[in-house]
Image 1 (cartoon, rainbow over the protein chains, first blue to last red):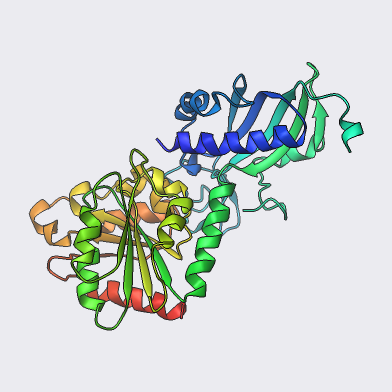
Image 2 (cartoon, rainbow over the protein chains, first blue to last red):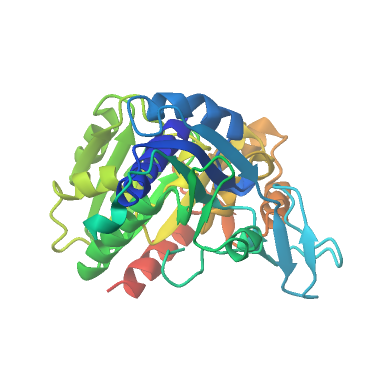
Length: 123
Length: 248
C-alpha cells in the first residue's frame, strides 16, 4: 500500500503550487498514471483523503488519467500499444523494445480556488 | 526524468502541455495551473544524492528485491563468506520489524544498519539516506540494500542504488515476471534462487522464467543460484566483482 506514500508526496507538491500561487484551497488535482508506474488508481483514490486531510487539498477531487502503454521496437522501429506484462512488438514480435509511455506518475495540473486578490501589489 | 529539460513530457501527455499554456482559467473561475512534475520527485532527488554519496566513496550499491522468504539474507550470508576476505561489504537491512536480519549479517563480521519501516511496505530514498548516516563508507567496496520482502511497492522507489537485483525463488513459480512486471522490468539481474529445490519441485522451468522476463522487454541476465549448495555462486560473485571494479 505504497499509494499512501505517493499521495503524501502529491499533497506536498500541491501545497507548494498553492502557496506559490497565493491560493488558499485546491478544488481539483489531475494526475496521469501509467500502469507500469506500479500505482493502482483505486488504491490511490482511497489513500488520497487520508493524505489530504487538514491540507489545502482537503476538499479537492483527485482525477486520475490512465496513460496507454506504448513501446517502440528496436528491430523494426514500429510503435505498438501493448499489455503491461507483454511489452513485445505487435508488428514483428521482437521483445527488444523501448517503453515510450506507460510508466508515468505525473502531477499534470491543479485548479486553485480563492486565489488572493492583490497579488500584483505583492510583487 | 526531471522538470527542467522537458524529458517528463511523453507522447502520453504532450497534448496537455501544448493545449492552453502554463496558466489558464476554468469556467468556474478557479485558476488552473500546469505542473507536470513527477510525484516521486522528492524521492528521486534524494536518490540522486544517495547515488552521488556512494559513487564519491567508490562504493558499488546493490538493491536486493524479492518476495519475503526468497533467500535475500541467506544469499548475503553466503556472499559475505565467499567475498569477505578480499572485499569490504556493508549492508542496509529493511524490514517491517525486528533486527533479526541485521544481526545475522553482523554475526558474519560485517557492518549492518537495520531500517525498521513499521508498517511501510518498501524502502524509500530518505530512509536509506538516514541509514547512511550510521554507516562509515570509507574503505567499503560494496553496499547491499536488502529491501523489504515485497514484489510490488519497492519497485516504485529509486534508492540511489547502481543496480537492482531481483530474486525469484523456485517455490514461487516461473511466471512471477508476468505477474509482477513492474518489479521485474526494473531488475538489472535476476537470480533464480533455491535452485537446489528444482529437482524436488519438478514444475519450475527456468527457461519459461527467462521467456516471461524477455516478454517484459528486459534483457537482464538471469541464472540459477543456490546459497545452500553453491550452484551459481561463482557467476554471482563475478558479477559483484565486476560491478565493484566499475565503481572504483
